[in-house]
Image 1 (cartoon, rainbow, N blue to C red):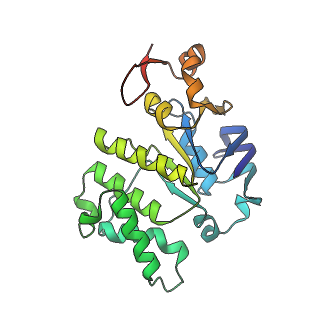
Image 2: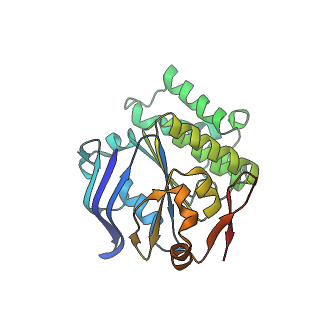
Length: 251
């Protein structure tokens, strides 16, 4: 479990995000929702150590800021929202996810190769492993980076809008995959602007409003928070009847 207490982070001395009390648990997907600029991405960057934080962030009894980069990378994998177009093959990119578990020689063993293949198969990219990342569509590049994250084989996944660039079919596949990974015991945090999708796949939802977080609530209770959703996100949820998602957006 990752436990956050009085967690604060920002840029140039200005506080961007503040979390009084939040738990990221094994076997659950926590959805972070909020308007643009609310602090969702800042939170993920601070938790993974890209920017500093104040307050407590305890991972299984150890303060995250006290971990080395290598130690942290063995526990937490992070997928940013902005993905660069690198000059390497899809397979090589996925193999980068194994670096924290390899010796300093960076020579891949059988276990590393198996992890990379499994990650590429999960993201439907095994057949594309020899293609250059530069040749991929935006959605394919998103899945290639997700394969790198999955190959890291961490207990926790921090994913900044993991389905944003994907077509509908691959969005569903990725969200179903994340649901399966959480069922296998992973602790997963995703940021999203897709309220119906989050309500369908997340176990708990935490809304970030102007840098402050609400208490995480079960996703099933989200639709009943009509006034709260309208005030913080500008929309509400209404039952959809039959279909993939139980709710649709409403104003």
